[in-house]
Image (cartoon, rainbow, N blue to C red; front, side, top):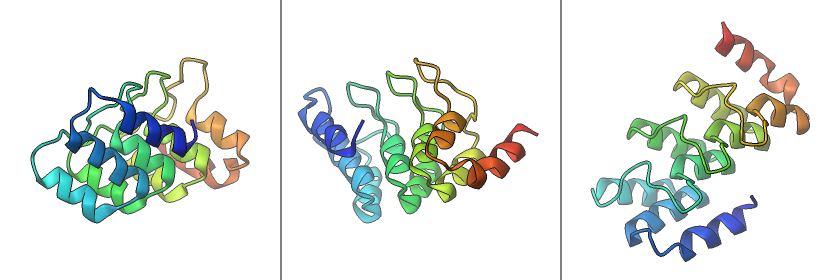
Length: 144
């Protein structure tokens, strides 16, 4: 799902609290300062989800926002959180070619072979994007 559609979904979802929306938007934009501010307020859970199950970590990983990914993981975000489609933060980082984020997520315990509901895996989308040479060593280390 393109980032613009993710933003619209977050803002339109009335089940989320205003703090949830602010956290999702900060994660989407890679705004580490506001992300930390919202998390430190104590008004939001680090793994809050929108109606599609999208967490702030998924949004940060999808945008390649390394500092936000690190902060969310430090604050206890689940590296294996899944959207309704079964996609994970690692799936989106691999799809976007964000090698640093891929390495961080794998080190944090992200599963490298979790399939989406249609069977796609992080390695599969990395291959689709032409990133297999970059990511090959990450997967080899993770599978050992």
